[in-house]
Image (cartoon, rainbow, N blue to C red; front, side):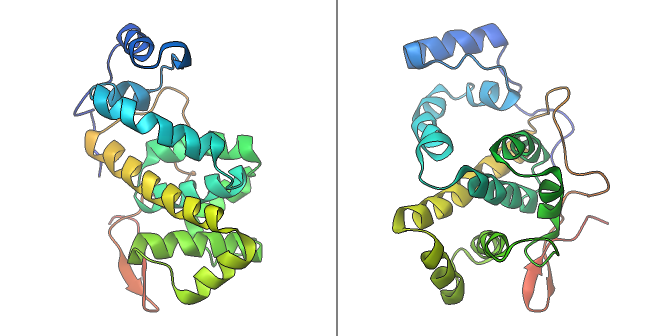
Length: 204
């Protein structure tokens, strides 16, 4: 469970804007999100990760809707309510429905997914649980995606696993009005085993 208060608070907005201009010049985004202002406590990391983030969210050949579905699933599995809220907004903007966002928490076997959406969520779960893709999942993805898209999917899951863990460990708090987990859905707890697979259970 994340701490109730941030362990490392975000830098003040004006300091963040100054640092962005210093690091990125005309490419500065001048945002105010708590996550961005928390990265700013480590300017070297802030600068180093920006190109990867911009590529994955804006330059990758992975379809935006697929990307956001994958991100929502991995940050749900890691219990990052902050990241889930941010990517609820981004997922809706990319074409996901509110019902699909909520259904992400139920996993790939929930009713209502297309065959490909279920495959995508299953791939995320395999990467999360096993740190690899099974041969059947790989073969199915390779029929739908080209090589670059498959690699980018894996990179997105790895990137947002890291983001979720970092946000949880640092206790980054949501901005006012940021969506959280769907109503009635608790943060996933430590995995239990059902049908030979690791699944998430809500904390007792």
